[in-house]
Image: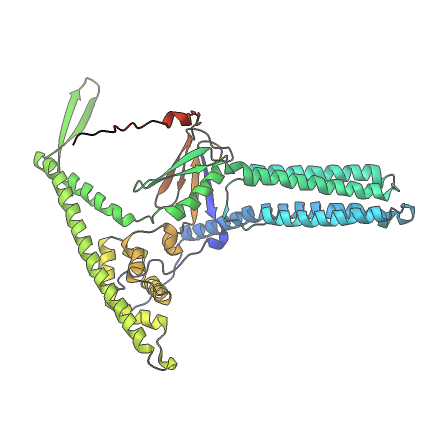
Length: 481
């Protein structure tokens, strides 16, 4: 089994010291802390600190080494045709044959093709990376090797046939440089096919299951390696999956603990005597009380019914409080139209003014639905100011809190994982196959991915004669009255 680490890009990784802020923003609290504090580090913490620094250095080396190598190869590729044209004019200029307008046309062709190649390389290979993969992309390495071998072979031929013999046919030298540029353009076309076009045709259906709550979604992907498919699935996960909420799992754990508390444990020990040794074998028999077993489903039913009732009650109070706050804002806007422009209240000030009227109802609703840690007071005020700026309705404001949205809807400090670990029995550079299973793990949960091939669909045609739909309606001239 292979375990690889898939990390987000360095620019996206950061830590927020206020991630675990106080969630009691709807209440007025005062906290005073007095005394002295001492900062001390143990030997284990120092070793862990050096380990973190070492991991960061290795991650930076892994991130920038392909960029440096790619930059060197690209610089060599772009400078080689120019060197082919400049070296004869510098080393043996007196012996070169003048080619006139033919060479000038070839010079123009080389210039235009090099410019096109430079823009094409910038569009395909110089894009900002969204993640660092655990292994090098096979196709990128293949294309870089092919480009390097092609350039070196041209340099070898140029050194043996042109530099050593000091060829006087300058037009042939220019055509040789043009052929190199044409070959590089075809290599770039091959790169477009392998990197951008090959995986567009869907071939596999990947089912993604979150291990904690069973949230499931399916995606169709093409011919990709395991690590590229994992990266695509993480992008889909942040866009489509609701935010992972560990607080929703506490209710089921509490119910399971309560169920185990009602079990009775009996200890039955058997002793077998022997001439040489005495062996003790014991086994535990666990049986639940019949009354508790029969009432477990009833407790679950009434618990869920009571929870739904409390959620509906809190929701109704929140809707009424928000609507009244927005009505107050509309009234203030109408009054501000009659006063001078210098006395008009700012949108942020208006949001701060009406927020206390809905804060308590919103906090109680978020606590009931166990989503209070997903929204901070600052984020709610910013969202309120955004809705007031764009003249949105109360329903538009409440939509972000009444129903859980996708992961990207919340702040990065709520969902951003420092790293994902890709666990796969096959090599992560190998392609997807039927029945393959791999997982993406982070600190709190994992995403289990199952690969299924899209079935081959056979479609046939059946011809329907248009004349078969024609019929004759015969009406009797005499009808009974």
